[in-house]
Image 1 (cartoon, rainbow, N blue to C red):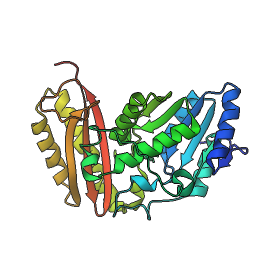
Image 2 (cartoon, rainbow, N blue to C red):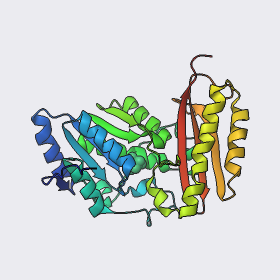
Image 3 (cartoon, rainbow, N blue to C red):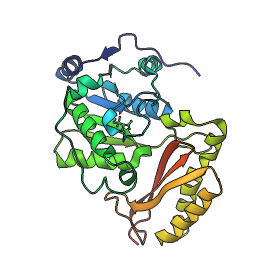
Length: 293
Ligand code: PAF
């Protein structure tokens, strides 16, 4: 397969002032601005977002910032994979215009007193296990939107709850941008691509494919007419339990927009799983639309 052409003039902006200048010049020339917010360690999931941004926008900014405020105490902030040079190469090859890579000091100054808290939607699923996580995500995304001023920001369905939270923040705070949510990219066995997959051994990676199998079981049951979510969740748990190394955090079926648990499945629902293999926490989800039954 031929490699895409490298973009030699890609800019690397480390300050808010410099990224703003670059974007403002492009905007004044009439460019449609795309933003792909990332924490780096770019993989094929991020590449799919970047490619979508390049397709839809004239000027694309990729932010690379391992955001400390979205890690709960005891989580993997320090050891989170960082591969800045390789990330830059990926961005160059995909014709990104600017990589915005600020320091934590640049983003938060000495003290940050203003936080964005999206209520309700952040309580279930990951919110229950990672208190404060979505406050950190919403705040950093609000900052990035204010700094870059994109027309469209691109997120992955892999972090389904995050996408719903960000969409709601944008709507509630009247932020003038569109949120595009792109499909989850999966490895051959179905495992959702994630930066944290790097932590897994070969065997754990194989074991982790059971997460998607449990979601497929859910889809299969809904498509065959089962509507009782308790029955489906019990079956999903049985599937997950066939792999002893999996420790289940949650298996839930929620209404796709409100994130409220559903008993009788109707409309669009999100089925979501969080589980640990060893010390690695993995999440995945699917959206199933079964109409108005
Ligand atoms: O999905 C992520 O990588 C992060 O949560 C995001 C959106 C870049 C915010 O730090």
